Amino acid sequence: MSWAGFDPFYGTSLAENLDKKLLVILRDGRKLIGILRSFDQFANVVIEDAVERIIVGEQFCDVSLGLYIIRGENVVLIGELDPAREELPSHMQRVSYKMIEEARKAEREATELKGSMRKRMEFLDLE
Image (cartoon, rainbow, N blue to C red; front, side, top):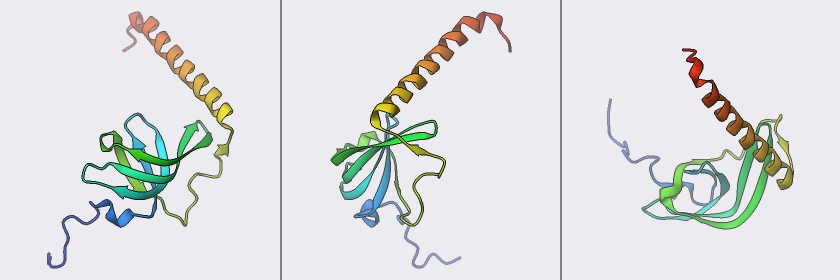
């Protein structure tokens, strides 16, 4: 196998993604979608026309953020979105911000209830 013409850093630079629509997943779990306008060596990025996509179950809402600067230490993943494909499966339903917040609250409460029930049942030692 010849290594002639092989670039060991292929795909490691964000430069090839400038002016393209990207998905950025942050350390706190938020998902941002927007057009990459700038970046630096610390993976600080500037996203134009940014939206935060909130997904709960089969519902989603896009919250407009505008021009958004993201500190590199908060970035978990950056990936290019394929403009030829739909961003979400067809079964996903777009809802209002108010409805998604209600769904998010209900999901959070269900998770807390599940955790508290698990703690109450630990004495059974079902393993």
